Amino acid sequence: MAIDSEVQVVESSIVTPSQATPRHQLWLSALDLLLVNRGHTPTVYFYRRAAAAAGDNFFDAARLKESLARALVAFYPLAGRLAVDDDADGRFVIDCNGEGALLVVARSDLTIGDLGDLTPSPELRKLFVPRVEPSSILLAVQVTFLKCGAVAFGTALHHAAADAISAFHFFHAWSSLCRRGLAGDDTDTVVELPCHDRSLLRARSPPMVIPDAFAVFCPKLTLTQKISGPVASKVFTVSDGHVAALKRACGGGGGVRVSTFAALSAHVWRCVCAARGLPANATTRLTLPASVRRRMRPPVPGGYFGNAVIWVGTSGAVGDVTSEGLGDTAGRIRSAVRRMDDEVVQSAIDYFELAAAEVKKEDAGRPIPGDLPETELRIISWLGMPVYDADYGWGRPELMVRAESERSGFVYLMNDGGGGAGGVQVVVCVEAAILEQFEKLLYAK
Image 1 (tube, rainbow, N blue to C red):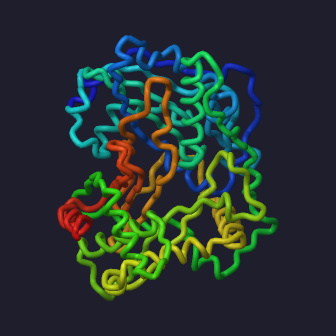
Image 2 (image 1 turned 90 degrees about the vertical axis):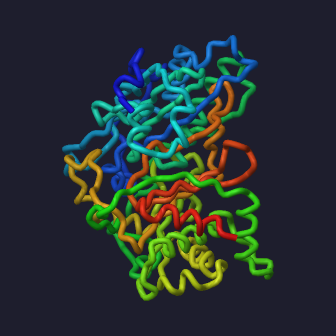
Image 3 (image 1 turned 180 degrees about the horizontal axis):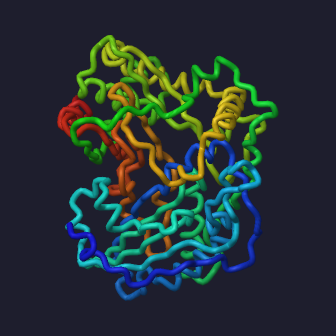
């Protein structure tokens, strides 16, 4: 697609908080600093104009600006800029200066039908996610009006500012404010206020890492050179019936309760190992992000805004993982998550604080090159998150997708919002050569 001719920018503006907000440098925890070079997370929500709303001002830019300005009062760090504190050995901070977030309004002659299956791709990102310049801007949004009457709502939120839980918290709050404004009253859902005290995740003094913690959390992202063949992304939908069957297979008739995440992650892991044709004696590793919010003692507030995730992992011989019962593979995943207690979390924070000195100013927004080794897989779960609660007053999104996959070896799980049948979307980014075989294994009875 000719990107420049497919989308025309109508308006680009900076939206500042509607009231005075605190002015200070927000200290970033070691868990935030880990993600400085991950840049902005790109997502796109697609909204269709309801027949009953044919006469309204669909996705009115003025209404969006006004509600965004109000949302930025409580979520004021997102109106700031990523910066370096030269008085703290060059540590990254968020300069809470109230300069604002970027809001772009655009139009396109494309229709949703022209976009195919909406698989994450560089093209999808270029079309609907705003280019963030300068890269120190933490939040950018692009509202694109399509020829068919639908809207593509693209977002770019810097990962150093928020993890997925915090990001969805913000978009839920903003959409609620916009919807309440359209309704003309404040009877809508009350959104929990964010907690910006990132010192709650400060490392101990002196840092102390227990050796056993390394058996639970993953110290760093293991990357190899870019794989030789092409990499492709594809979205698969696993029906609620299929998910139920996987959970039953994990239980083995013994009444064991298995989460959707554990059952489906175990199945995907086994399918990827088999599709790649890995040697039976090779060691395969699965890693997944786990929120520390409820694992710490005392727990951090539910509205904690920032990054509160560490990566935990489990591994085994390929031959074992692919031949054992599905419940055994799911058990590996459950065990890894259950071993994450307060001491492991504190050890992880201490370890990453010691490593924070390696995060340099020039690394900001610069992706780490390479792919995961063939023997590794990372599964990120957005299951149960309020992805489809982002109703700005014109209805819930029909679909939400990550606009571009990060690298080969990453999988995203999220509730299927298209048909409302309770299924799960599995977004897979792997070598293009194995996608067909992976699909056969994923849906095999």
